[in-house]
Length: 135
Image (tube, rainbow, N blue to C red; front, side, top):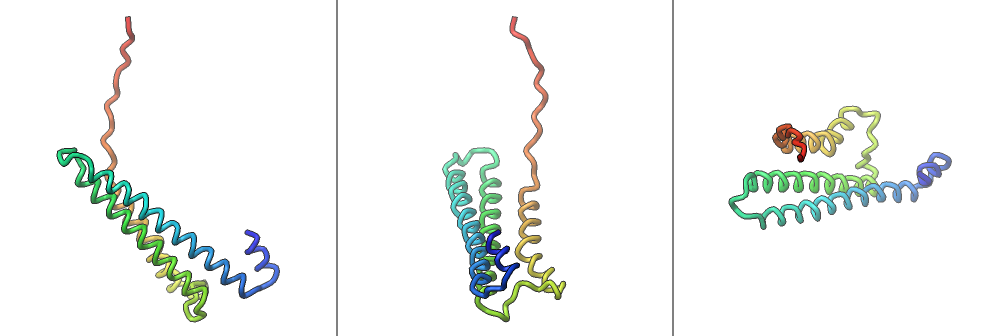
């Protein structure tokens, strides 16, 4: 917030680069977080007995979500790095709505839709258990 306030007050090119690299770092850590925790969950599910009900489906779901989220955050990180150092690769395309739509479609909307599609199955509802008082 402090960087944005300083940039609002006075435009400093070095601070613009630092702010863009900060967001690239946030995206990189998000990608690494998905890889780390998704990978750990995947390995944990692999250790379950082969006979476990739904094991294969959960392995696929966890694998797909891990790969999808990690790759999208990594692409966003790379794009932010290009944006920070290459003036021709400006991601601030508010005056060009088609490019803006394509960028956000690829790095935010499409991954969200795919994750929701992969995880669309809800667990079955539990039956209502009746209360039996102990006499």
